[in-house]
Image (cartoon, rainbow, N blue to C red):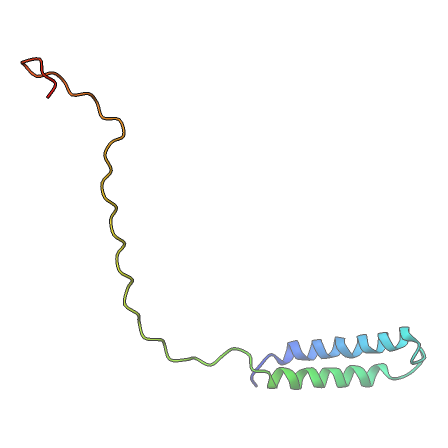
Length: 96
């Protein structure tokens, strides 16, 4: 069996019980009403049916063709140093 029938059983069971509690608290049914068992059973069977029918997971699709890698980013131009050291004087005493 596909799906998650155990999860569906307990989910439906709790749904049926809580519907009975809601009806009882709203005053729609008396507290001594025997509607608890049928609601719980219908909820449990409905939960199993939905769990078996639900499309859990997804079908495997064919892999997409590999795209070409993006072009390399251009390298920025080399920046000059903002504060260059002063030139040292030559033998003649010139700084050039």
